[in-house]
Each structure stands twice: as C-alpha cells, then as structure tokens.
Length: 364
Image (tube, rainbow, N blue to C red):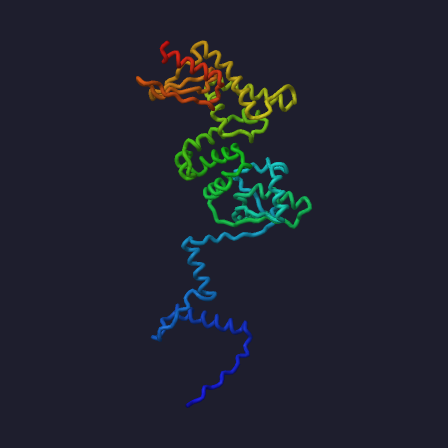
C-alpha cells in the first residue's frame, strides 16, 4: 500500500493566490475565445465568473438597454453653462426663489439630486446644463457665500436637442417652482425648432392632448404689453387663458385691453395711484376695460343673444365676450345646458342668461 505524499504548505501570500486563480481563469477564457479547445472531459464552466466575465456581462446589459450607464461627477459650477434653450429663466432666479433649495443643500451638506448635463467643446466650459439651472444657481450662491466646499453634482448624458427638450420638460413638469409662463414659452420655441410647427406631432411626443398643449401655446402668445402689466408675470397660469383669450379676439376689445394694460404698467412703474395687486385683480381690471367696447356691440346686438357654434349648439356670451353657458341639446323632454363658471363672466351675468333661457323655454 502506497503512502500518500505529504502535502507541502503553500507559502504564497493570499493576494498572490487570488491573482493566480484569476489569471488562470482569464487565460483560459481568452484562449477558448481564440481557438477551439481539444476534446476534454466535461467540467463545470466558469463563464461569467471573475473580472472578465463580470465585465462582459456588464457590457452585454448596457448594449441591450437593461442597464443605463450615466456617470455622475462633482464639478465646479463655473465650468458649466446654461443651455440656451433651457426652460428656466435663469436671470429671474434670486435668493428668495431658491431659498428652499439653499436650505436643503446646507442641511444635507451637499446637493442630493444631480443635474442633467452634456459635454461640450469649449475653452470656458466643460458641460451644458439641460436640467438643473436652479440647482446651479443655488450651489454657485453658496460657494460665493462661505461654502466653497460644496460642488455641483451632475449626471452626464449624450442627448440631441429634441431629447434634451423632452427630458427637461419631464423633469420640470411636476415642479411648482417652474411657472406656467416659463413652460409655455419653452413649448412655443420647441414647436418651431423640433416639430415643424405641428401641434399634433408635438403633443404626441410629449404624450399629452392637443387641447392641453394649445392652452400653453395661447399663454405664450399673450402680448408683451399685457404680460408686463401683471404684478408678477410668473403668476400667470394656463387657467387664466379662458378669461383673457375672449377679450383679445375682437379688435376693438383688444385695443381697449392693451391700452389699459399699458396704463397700469406705467402707473405701477411710477408708483402712482392704486393698481391691481395680484393676477386675479389684474384680470378683472382687463375684463372691465373690455366692457366699454362690449357696450358698443351691445347696442347693435342684445348682450345675451345666442351665438351659433355651427353644430346645432348655442353659446351665450357676456357683454365683454366671455362665454356664460351653452345649450347642448333640446328635445321634447327638456334642455341640456353647460355652465362656463370659469369662462371669465360674472355670476350676475350668468344668472341673467339663465333667466333669459327660462323665459324662452319655460311656459308661464
């Protein structure tokens, strides 16, 4: 009976043993990928094990889209510039508008959510900011106010201009700190830049309805004289379009409204007289200014005379042109009516229109 030779202890350090094992695996995988292996007894495969296998699996996941590799870096904000098509009015940012973000960064000691940027070829800048102008302003302000240790966290992506627009829109759509007016102006620019002025195509790419997009575009198209007259133009909402659009369509009303807007803006600038203090007060003042032109139309046509919509329905407007109600259907059993309680008219005008409707359809 033969004696088993005594095993000698291995004196290689643990690190060298590990590297030896990995090198063997690396060489075996490399040789097998170059030339076919000779017939050998079946043995367990090591595919996907070790450094090379892990890297191959990672590359395969990246190629298939299962993993997105967007590197993040902490950079000097001075090396980043705002994309010239960014939807944020960077010049309008200040300590008040960024106060909550400044407090959050101070509390955490860092910026938590990375901005989205892309690399550029420039002597003065390394990155172009697609999303994160407010974060850029806050970090820059902190660095200038005794916190030079705070750096700007960015996520680097490779994007076309249209992709950059949609990503910026998706990130900012749910943010309350981006005003409807800023978003509306961004949409109006994008309509011509990326979608050949096709609202249908743009709405489809944004996964929104054409009616939703149309209201934003109407807001962006408001005359500058009117927008500047508001105490804070960024308080304008798309909900205000239902009140403003009707009084800007007839030329005589439009002229009266814009003249009143210029008068209010001049008075506010000079600090003379009482002027509207917020958006609702401003809209009421403009609707009232349109009333003078409406009075002239009132003499030629009754204030509550129905206007045919072309589909058998009738829409009743106020003297200023604001829609009050619509008669949708009429049969032997009754009349179906839709009230436009946010159409810009007053309750008194709506009640008068309803009384006229009762007089026409309800026998004494």
